[in-house]
Amino acid sequence: MAASFPETAISTERLLLRPLSEDDAPGLATMMADDLVLAWTDLPHPFTEQYAADLARTLAPSHRAAGRGIVFAVTEHLTQRLVGLVELRATDWRLRSTEIAYVTAAWARGEGYAPEAVLGVAQWLFEDRGFLRLEMRTAAGNTAAQQVAQKIGGISEGVLRSAWIVRGESGEVVEESRSDVILWSLLPEDMEAPAPEHSGRYGDHRYVLRD
Image 1 (cartoon, rainbow, N blue to C red):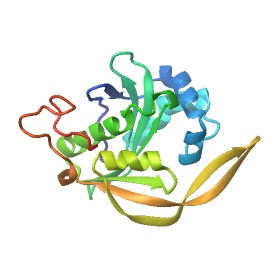
Image 2: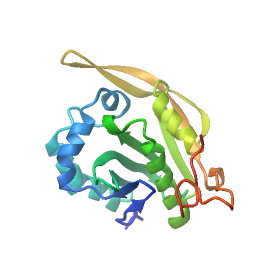
Image 3: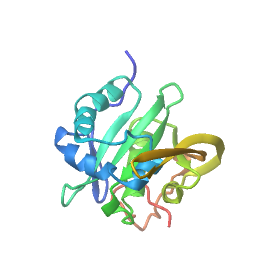
């Protein structure tokens, strides 16, 4: 049987990353009906409530059980409102390496939720699961995703030429074009620990975001 991640939850200062629930389906469908999600991700379009329910009920659990990765719903501690989605994929258990992808709801952008969620997952991977490498791939034009990679201490390793499809809508037609991709990596030694006299942004959590 393939190695796999345990079904678990990850807590950060403001966020709870937990398994998807079918109750998340309406919020997921609303979150994915966004031009930036269409442009920069490979998620289905349209992303319907039925697909969201299938993702929670069967697709995400199968993804985890097969050892390919894990999918987290990202919610606020205070409101339990769904603010994003984080997925680990292309997991290599021999290399202890995996790739992370993330989506933030339009209303929640600019609050630092994406780097906080990604950093929480990185800490869990390195400290609790013994992983040694986390990869991120960002389309060349996706500056917001590149800023997330920089804030968590990711290192740019180069450009993968013509390695992604960028989508956009023209009326009722989805148009596609090819894009370069920037490859980022994060290793345990890349993460910045707070100074001893400070608890850091995450209280008892070990690592902090870069400005």
